[in-house]
Image 1 (tube, helix red, strand yellow):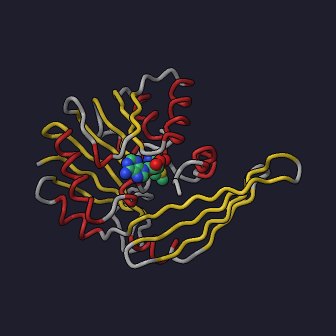
Image 2 (cartoon, rainbow, N blue to C red; image 1 turned 135 degrees about the vertical axis):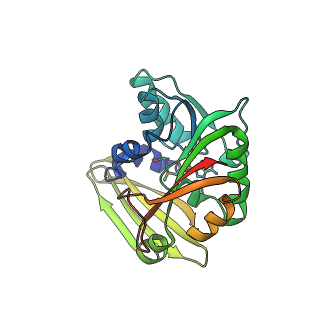
Length: 237
Ligand SMILES: C[S@@+](CC[C@H](N)C(=O)[O-])C[C@H]1O[C@@H](n2cnc3c(N)ncnc32)[C@H](O)[C@@H]1O
């Protein structure tokens, strides 16, 4: 079953509480020049970085999410290159200044593939380049999302989001009920798998080739054991 297909249509609305402006405010001094936004989704970060004067590329596995991003950028008059591709296959024609991967993109990468991802990013950015990414923390995935059930009910769409905590991941099964007309709803299912990555493991993968700092990705301050999002800011060594 595909991820981010029906969800693409409602993603921005359902992400209403994600502080994209605060995030950009925090990272904007690190990222300048030509950049790529990995797992860019509907392009909320990509368009903000483009609006700030950066030359941007957005890459995502989901064509539906990229359609939303394309329409959004066009409506703002922004010239952004969108690529529908697995970020593990990243291969640019020239080296760029920075990469970002915001709001869980890294949680979609299996533990065994993380080293490949960091190597790919390093190969495609210049010496002195920056890689900013975040993860939903192991604390959040195990203790908050875990085996829990979430739902939201709007006039036109209702969803039930059922999580199953496994050893190294959380499986997320979402049932959408989309209003067709009056009392008629269409049921559509989507499944996602987010991998649990421990902070120490990520650090062990990056410390050889990158200098880095880690922040709480919601408060933009020092992380604690209960931080829900960990934000890593890397600079090539
Ligand atoms: C939670 S969304 C985040 C989207 C966006 N970065 C944001 O901040 O709103 C995760 C995105 O990761 C994308 N994704 C998952 N695995 C991917 C992969 N291997 N390569 C590229 N994109 C991927 C999904 O299609 C989805 O758009």
